[in-house]
Length: 130
Image (cartoon, rainbow, N blue to C red):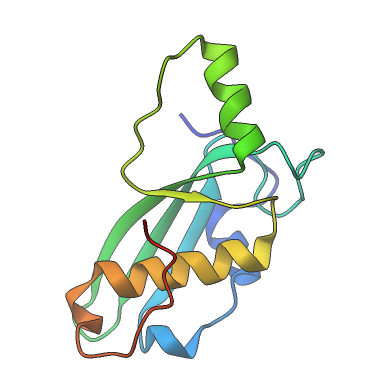
């Protein structure tokens, strides 16, 4: 169960500015599973947490949830060590050199565009896929 912070998920989405590349789609809620999405983590090089989003399409009035595992290499290493795991499987993972909210925002927008039929005819998403 997500921790509750002073900020509510719909308030946090205000820190995630409107992106014209999403067209009419809106991010209406946004929160991390364990971390406060508004404040930077103490160690920006060691971060690993699940980011939850709620998206809304005003044309269809459809709302849906999406999540991404956001991490840094050091954060992944710490998670594996702390849990004594041999591997980690995360189908929707975004890995960054360090925690940077603007980089996370751009990557999430890029993934939303790449993952949804709504954007099939749009330009390159700028992904850094393997």
